[in-house]
Length: 314
Image 1: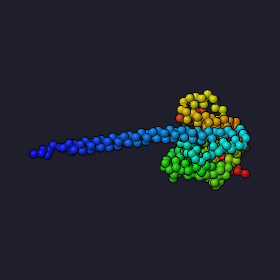
Image 2: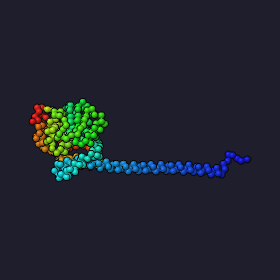
Image 3: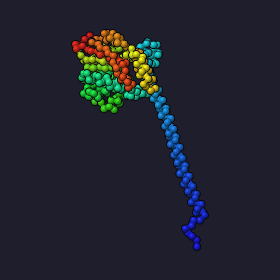
Image 4: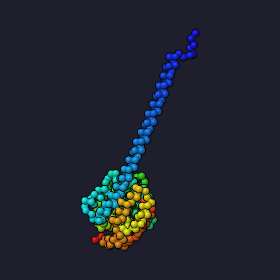
């Protein structure tokens, strides 16, 4: 009698064949999965490498543009060179995005320190930040004084979009508003603000006296105009000390941004002479230390101007 529990030779052969096919499928599936993972990791590394290089180049280009533009204007270089520098500074994308990223990481403590100084000394109801860029000064002011009405204005529409996004992220949109505009023709009524502030933009203005007079017009009697800008006479040893503490990207950005801008900036005597040509009174110039790229730097001038209590716009 045939033993039904014992498989025939044909059945054994079929079982072995099926097992081989299963192992083959498992092996090929595992191999394909490994290949996919390897390719994904390789592509990821490639993309991250390209992205990092792009970010570095964009940040450096954006900051270089700011410094070179100011330097070109200050040194009265040929118009073509100045226009080229200006085109680098004003590039809408991705330059402004990358500059905003740098400002958030390296420059926001500077705005926070200035906001703290302003709000701790006096109370202001209406404040304008002239040349607001990514909007960090109005945001820091609003975080410290939520009841104030704070405006920021910039010539770049792209920067204003970034500033609005930053205000939304910081949840201060009820206190802060941003708009585009020319600093020599501001879209505000006369006697509107009790404080106007500008940070590191004075050396960029082609007609600073025209800006001063426009600010005088929109200030209430007794209002203040506070200007923070780089010092022209920062010792080279101070810059070198700061550079030695930074990695490649911020070190390069420092060289072509703040250092180049300081060379195009004004000295203390220049600021006082400029103030004397305006309707403002009681000009005060002070050398101040503020955080720059994460370190305290004696690289700034603070100019305070007062509009007389009795309006003398004429």
